[in-house]
Image 1 (cartoon, helix red, strand yellow):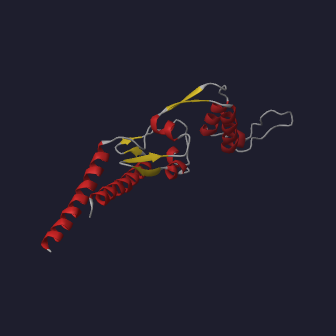
Image 2 (cartoon, rainbow, N blue to C red; image 1 turned 135 degrees about the vertical axis):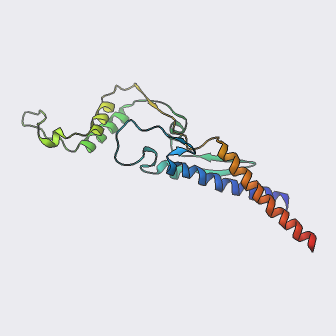
Image 3 (spheres, rainbow, N blue to C red; image 1 turned 90 degrees about the horizontal axis):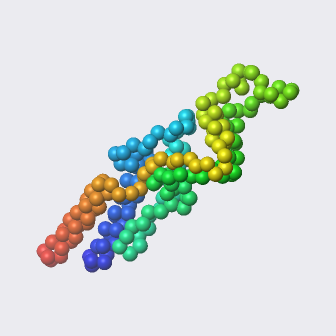
Length: 182
């Protein structure tokens, strides 16, 4: 085995192992051993980060020279990973209203246009009210998104790299010993 092939094998193996570890962060709902902060919105449809799994599926790893680069095509990936603030836009307000009506169900109205006092209307969920509160925000206000890291530096990454390099070194040593015995 030549050194260039040995180097490429290590990079491929590290890429595969790290991609698996970063994917497991979505199962763990944590960045290795640090749990993600809970969502303030009450939600019965599962974890915020794994509801649709779009973010999880968007992660790609590429080998570029001596580096392994992880990326996502989704515009919100970096905000979720690093935290930050998002400015409310008119489009977001429309989405919040849509989620409010979807969550609350169709609200009954009286003939005069006011909201009826039926059980269904009174049964608006906490989640629906939270969507309504978001929808009532003014365009230009900011919403703080907490950090929910799923990719980044962590001591476990060093362990994975060390394990992969050691396994590849062991294979190389065995090949050298076979070649010397001949």
